[in-house]
Length: 269
Length: 260
Ligand SMILES: Nc1ncnc2c1ncn2[C@@H]1O[C@H](COP(=O)(O)OP(=O)(O)OP(=O)(O)O)[C@@H](O)[C@H]1O
Ligand SMILES: [Mg+2]
Image (cartoon, rainbow over all chains, first blue to last red; front, side):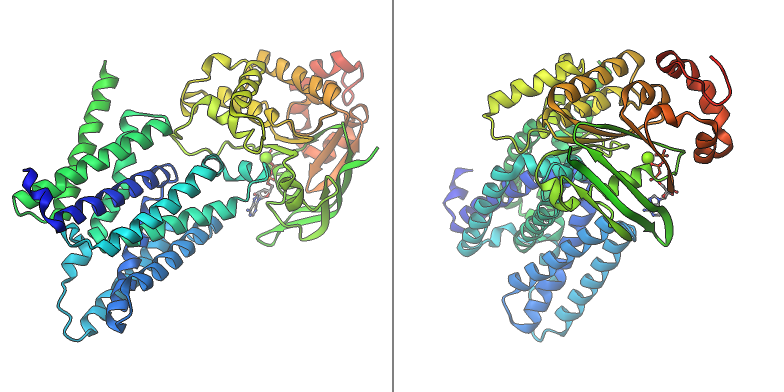
């Protein structure tokens, strides 16, 4: 088993996969307490439009992906704050348009060989050095931001009106958090695909909060959970020649239901 | 004494409907004001306008001598909303919630925790400090929220029906505690309440609000049939029956034309 660690692309997959896993599991706390899973699905699908346009125009897809994701995220955030249109509807509309654009751009792209499949499920085994640097830099920024402002951000999530009257610039934290989630999602989509990115940002805290109720324990157990899932996912997919993204999502899913089961057992006693 | 709150010619329309019309009043530092009136009379809307959530259609608000959005930035304003809009299963402990009140505090963490525990004790919730906040009952959550507002030691607090869901004994000690803060720290209190008994024994001024400010003045002038009827319309009998003896015991005056 250990000899696979010698292979460079496996090393990159492990380092990159772990970086993404830890970043998304920290953010998953906020996705869960704000009930933002649908916002996140909206963002990850919008990313697809951006990445596809990038491929079509021959511009670095990641930057257009970020542009699409951040603007979709901010727009959804704004609409949901305003509360005039139901946010599920606005998200549904925005992401279907963006997905449709994505498919059109990709079809228009001459000699486009890479398949749609890899956008959807990604391939953790193709992570490069550059991807890793970008991820490490952005992770560092995110952790510093959260470390400095954690209590204020949590207060805003607790009750925005009350946080505002305590003198906190709630809009700043609200939109910053959405922007960070959007950028993290783009990086994740490029590396692990739309589906796995959603799983990695929704399932860790959703699973952990079946067993723990306090945010500190939820964060720590989400991180540990994600690290384990990614390692096992990479190993299993390599060993049995399975698609890495789908394998990992499947393991996340199993653990979620396992946690639900444990919670039921605890309650039953 | 200076006016800590000033409301001038205030008109608020929401979706084309006039909720508040030409409201004028001011509150001095250290005063306690009760805002009363029927459901839908605009009490919550008035608080939200004073705090800057809602822009006035006409007129203006000065809070601590500043426009609302700047006033809240001083950290000297406390707010207890009518609805506790906290997401379900929010992953914090009771102590964490009170610590939110100290979010701007420069005290070292240990001192903050001591202070938070002290305020939890005031509201009788100390034994629950390590409980999940979302597992508490409505009244218990309200008590913790009160500790969260007061621990910040604000200069002026806005309480929207603070006694909702709180049992009688806890209410009594809550109002005693407010009175204590008012007397020792000069805390200014603006609260919305339906509890006329409390109003009578506890506040300096009453604002009777139902779209217009029908009454503004001392409690002793408020309990008059024509004022109450103008404010509440025909539902007056109900209110009088519910509260007459409490109010009378403390103030020894007649409500409407009934004698206690
Ligand atoms: N966003 C809004 N858009 C339109 N109308 C609104 C809005 N918010 C409140 N209203 C209306 O304004 C009126 C006053 O509401 P408000 O909540 O201020 O009353 P209240 O005096 O606090 O009542 P209660 O005693 O029930 O708490 C109501 O008729 C309500 O329907
Ligand atoms: Mg109200």
